[in-house]
Image 1 (cartoon, rainbow, N blue to C red):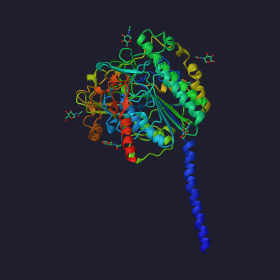
Image 2 (cartoon, rainbow, N blue to C red):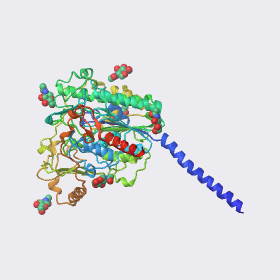
Image 3 (tube, rainbow, N blue to C red):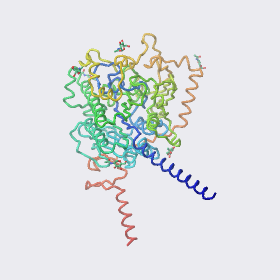
Image 4 (cartoon, protein in one colour):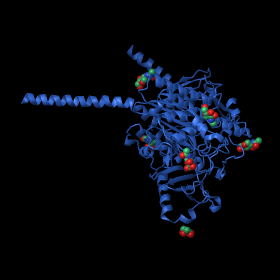
Length: 586
Ligand SMILES: *[C@@H]1O[C@H](CO)[C@@H](O)[C@H](O)[C@H]1NC(C)=O
Ligand SMILES: *[C@@H]1O[C@H](CO)[C@@H](O)[C@H](O)[C@H]1NC(C)=O
Ligand SMILES: *[C@@H]1O[C@H](CO)[C@@H](O)[C@H](O)[C@H]1NC(C)=O
Ligand SMILES: *[C@@H]1O[C@H](CO)[C@@H](O)[C@H](O)[C@H]1NC(C)=O
Ligand SMILES: *[C@@H]1O[C@H](CO)[C@@H](O)[C@H](O)[C@H]1NC(C)=O
Ligand SMILES: *[C@@H]1O[C@H](CO)[C@@H](O)[C@H](O)[C@H]1NC(C)=O
């Protein structure tokens, strides 16, 4: 009896041990082989209409278009209106008001960053077995070493820490303060190897290298690659738009030189998308990858850092409360999606990407993260568009220019604006007198791209290019049917963004006393009450690159040195501790 019982219990325990072992081992096996690679290519300040998959023929972006038509066009991906808040939302899955990142951007001489107690998407993916790599722009803080990407979840960073750099010298000049320094690093070390090389190409080559190393050396580990291009953001004030001569030569048909250079900058970015997809194909990683292309915010058509970007036909531009600031040019592709070759009109917020991609990777998130972003993976996978999304786009209680922008379903509320409303108009346009000669054979051009062919190889299917291009176009009612002006500095404005994506018809007068508007307004007040105070800090002249070998660096952790050598505080304290402890030991 007892022996039998022992046998039974020992076989149970064997079984349990086996089960435990299997759970551990099997989860290791699934963790290292089933998770998709996540490849995110993010453009900086690319206008909503600077890609050609919505019908523009001013200059074509065949690779991005081929990705878009092969995958799912995200027609309503909402980002924040500027770089820092948008990147903070992407990497935390939270609204900028939840992390204190809502006001303006981090200027290089300001000592603040994404709060250190926030968990980043890179940390989450790394914890779940991914290799995490950031190539290009960071812009979430650099005054302390702890703010920088390799301390925030990235195994690798090649790129710059600040707002932007020159396309060839990789230096950032802050003219008003007389600061000028080099800002380009390979992990924590400054590197000058790229000086003289066009930065779009430098980052593309690094991405290709990362994919090839990964594919040839370590395919069992999934890759999380965030390729944050500089393009087509303006460079330094004295020489904002820069493009290689061979690229420029393709756009002679554009008479205005500024427009021509901009077209070439975007075209080089488009090539980058092609080369990344080719590298994934060569390494046979495409089959198991999710590839996302997006812009961090709308384009700046006029004013600061303007590039002639176009958000046509949307209203406003970067750093305004309008659709032209918020809607990102975006497309996503994965063999997981059931409706490849479609336009997805579901509203999705940039902060939704963390939980959505995590779900796509089978990562379960700790509810303690308290994300604002929603997991829209199944909606994306199956192509349904029925989730009513509430998005707090902007809630900036800055005293000089308080403004807000909020959407729930089709309703959008705006109150206040930036730059006294100077950029509140419809600023972008399509030049019909100068069209890309390649547009005559547009469909052939797309089908001839290697992107198209590679994606067809792993996800074959009929795609009606002209139909998709048509569906992705933004339809706005004829302005003749009634413009009801919005004066956001005087009173709130209300728009039906589904019927009126161009924000021409302000419905506030009609709706101001209705529960529809009052509910929206009450919800906004609730957000305002919960908002984390902005983290912004005033400029600190100690950052001056002259103190640090003409490098932008984490000046709060460095001792400036007249001899030009940089001695890290950390190293100093480590050395002191070492001396002290060795004394004790001795
Ligand atoms: C980080 O700290 C700030 C204030 O110190 C707090 O408001 C915020 O909720 C914290 N965030 C997390 C994720 O714990
Ligand atoms: C491969 O992945 C393992 C596990 O993440 C890592 O430890 C190792 O350094 C990687 N090897 C190469 C060659 O990258
Ligand atoms: C070129 O375009 C820019 C921006 O649209 C404009 O400011 C400039 O005046 C144009 N230059 C010429 C020579 O037309
Ligand atoms: C597409 O490729 C075919 C075959 O190589 C070529 O004949 C044709 O001219 C190309 N068309 C375009 C628009 O590039
Ligand atoms: C593509 O769609 C358009 C418009 O819906 C239609 O006229 C055309 O025949 C379709 N082309 C093909 C090849 O199915
Ligand atoms: C809404 O209420 C305000 C203040 O009571 C009033 O002046 C206005 O006429 C009302 N508007 C409508 C459309 O009823």
